[in-house]
Image (cartoon, rainbow, N blue to C red; front, side, top):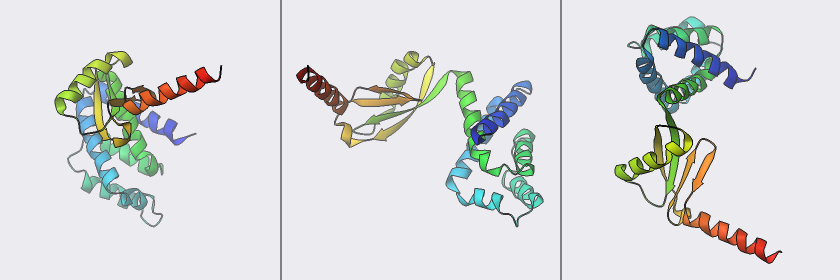
Length: 182
């Protein structure tokens, strides 16, 4: 079974538990913090997978590091450690956050532009494109890409909205080439 499927099952179980106990927002906050820790400290997974470190030592380290976290998150981490599934922790967190975004009607997206966009511009882009992908709003990450020459390119999941100058030039070139080949 692939790691993504396993991660999704753990995330789904934690999501359902959060719904039952009305703790979804708290769990999301804790898991986002945990995600930041895993992203900023690449050696953490290496430590958790190390064969000379006992499961009890790993659990103790997690308890000490994440003392203020809810029992649900800590117990989920303990279960993953008991079952030697340490490497799926970041995937499980990402799956949980995706479930939360879906429940809230939010999607993560990247907007590529020639310059850094202002908050007002990002807000207008979110308001314009969210209904087009069936969401209430978009969590936008601005990526500065001078190769697009002007305009913006928006990627939401596997959908791309290309309003960039370079994209328009590529489309014009394709049209001209296909017209000459007729």
